[in-house]
Image 1 (tube, rainbow, N blue to C red):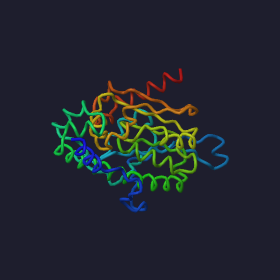
Image 2 (image 1 turned 30 degrees about the horizontal axis):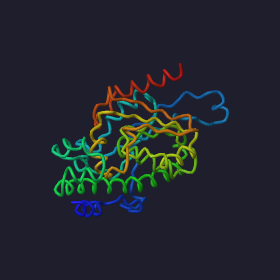
Image 3 (image 1 turned 60 degrees about the horizontal axis):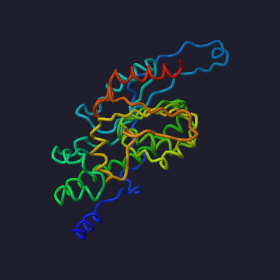
Image 4 (image 1 turned 90 degrees about the vertical axis):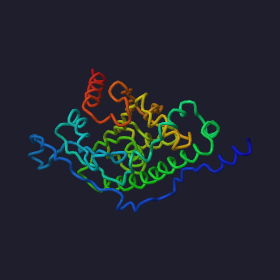
Length: 290
């Protein structure tokens, strides 16, 4: 039995961080959802003929939904926090959520599975095959997010209108944000909202980002009942990662990291982008200032 377990475990795939799925130049497109409202000019701006526009909001989905490219659900959050700001959709080759999920039978077994060895013992060869297939979809998506992060960082660096922009990412969109921030050489992003983040919470992945962007605010929204991250994501990473959508982000020196438990308004992985979360975020920041 032990030799069989070792053989199956050896066959488990590993995440190839060097795998490239797309050419960075074509990996991402920016689509304007709406233009922002112009601020009234101040006397100083009138004299100097300069104009300070409100920060642009960039929203990033983590997967394709039944609505296709419709990102109107983001506006329920954005309108609560930034009603007058320009909003841009960062479009990328996101996979389908259905490819990243486990079937009901596997989900029922997953709470008792905590390691690769227990996964093999509980699920056997047939279960391993199903997990392996799901893991393959996750690994493909992970590789794509890295390429997208490189491309998005390049676009932000080159566009002066994106100075001070705000990034909002859901699920794999939060993973794209981490890659983007890691790639950026300048502090051009003012805030990063990470919703149901499908990206590792390991400090080694984040310390460089936090050290490089000491003035950027990071808001990590977590849900204790997110079954996609609890089971599918962990199985997809073969229990090598604990996602930020379930675990807090920490850094000993960065003072602008906020971890919020939003379980009350986001009970599922797909239930984050709505007005109630926007209201919760607005109240949380209001309480911090008071």
